[in-house]
Length: 398
Length: 158
Image (cartoon, rainbow over all chains, first blue to last red):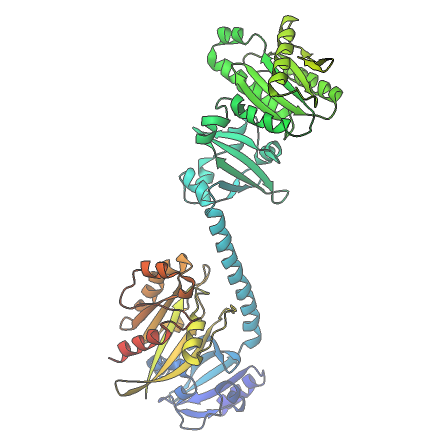
């Protein structure tokens, strides 16, 4: 007993432990003075310890095993008692006595609680955000340069996978679907940032948009437009607008006071390309040609395929000279580009400058651009010809 | 007097502490303060002429990274499994909590609380199919809280 007292004194000197000694019936034998702060009142000799520690109710038999198996230990962690957090542990003292130690862990538990609170709130927020992104109809995915790091449920469902690992195993490399020459998602971001580009995945057409999250991480949004686009907006081969949709956009543009150039572009000798290399190669030329045009125009410019090898551009410029320079630069870009199998392709450009003359409507603009294209072809192709609006008195002559 | 240990078990932030507070003190506070460890509350009931002290264990909720400590569950006579009707994942994890609890306490009784029912519309409540031991509860408006605890107590004392 003297030894036990010495040990207890050593423990108590740390000021973080209090104790109660109990007999085999779990009745109090003695208790330290400080134990009262955890138990409301000071235990008296002979009291049932369960009156003070209801945490032991239901576990009486397990606690009593301590008297039989001396190395057995009963512990209960992080128990809130009287504004304190304590660990309760019961250990063998001798065959008739066990010690119930109350270890004050309030400070560390409060710190843990702060962390847990933060962690749980973060989890709730994460789960809510996950539900928000999963509820979107668009396919969302976040990437670093090389790989997809996060994707919403719609994305997983579309690519028939359940988790991000499944996506990685599929090696989707979506940047290659946009353009086979792209090396990674950063390059895809550079190409689609602040634009409304189209991407074809399998039989489906999507609008792809990109948002910068961090310099290293990008968010991409794929909005499926297959039905709508195939029906009226998008030319399925080249991914640019159809003429009908271009006309709607052109009408809207004409209602603004912006100056712009309307350009009809026609690939030179396209029939010869088809006849020489076959239609599949001809289609590749059309795709590459339209891709070059798309890369060379600005975000708010318009591009459409009129049909066959003919394309329409509406380039918003304030100054006619700058517009002329830009279109000439476009012609040179095509002239200098290496087109896969065919290698060299040229195009003729017929351009009309939109001024705010009353009679300058979509029809007249298009007519002038078309006449200019006719002249460009007749003059030897691979050139830009402008057709100005002529005024005779009060009349505008196209 | 008979003493019975019961636990409230479930995922974090489903309203376990709020249910106890409503049952013991008839109060409600909608600020979320996570429970750490365990806190025991007492309630004396008289059922079938017997006086019984319920020792109600408010146990730290399970999180995706931490399950409920089995040391808290041992020796329990009953449990109330709580989920949040607004968070389907908390409803889905009930089976796992029940399985763990019954493995440690095979003779124990339990009831289920679909809590935060005040967030549901009348139609949503009607659409829920509840089994006999499941209650649509709200610690906020006290709906079915009393009957939740007394049903479990009666089953334990029968």
